[in-house]
Length: 281
Image (cartoon, rainbow, N blue to C red; front, side):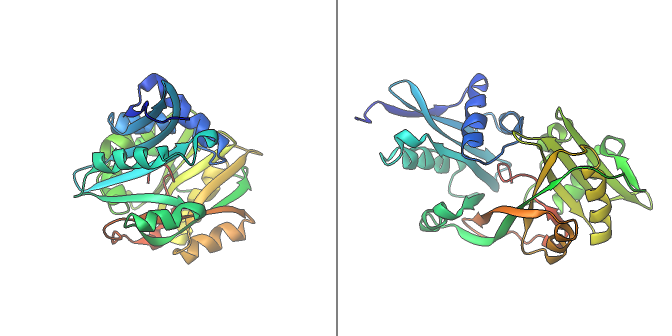
């Protein structure tokens, strides 16, 4: 099949369901509204590959600010692989994010060598764990919407490579989700979000100043959806986080590598008990 009529263009808002459907088919279990958040965070950040007018691939390239971007949803439909279409989509995304940004991604094992060839290095691995919702909400938990938004933004900035006010505004208010915080002496010392996914629910982020706060948040988030499957992606560099999910008998189901192309951000990984999203950083 000739690929002369292959183009890469901006994905329209009405087409973003394609990326979610393709990601679900790949077994990534995306959040039901993840594509919408990419669009709201960066309207130029979703690209669609078309061959003879047919959508065959996509990628997201979110520019959080002038210094940091994140790649995900890098998918070519199986019947169109091996024709060089994916690399054209990739190059368009990299060109969009530019040479000056530090770019992050979560790479599946099969793709990590290709990412290394493009200059990416592994920071640590994310292990996806699966469990079941249920239990009770412990003391100290508050609805995150009761916390001043700028306090949330400032707290989150300590644990993410850029300030992401616009993203957080939408993330904590998305449908079919619960956003919770933990206060100590009136100050935010941890927060977490659980959202609806293609299968069950996904927790992310779960940030906390220590393991005890993280455990309280974890219990509260699990309690939101009794008997439902619950997934979270835990950095293996945080041994306390691994210990926490193992104590609750969650089971590992998959693994990816967090990679960056310029430098590994200096973040307190011991406070990251679950990453926000493999699709959004």
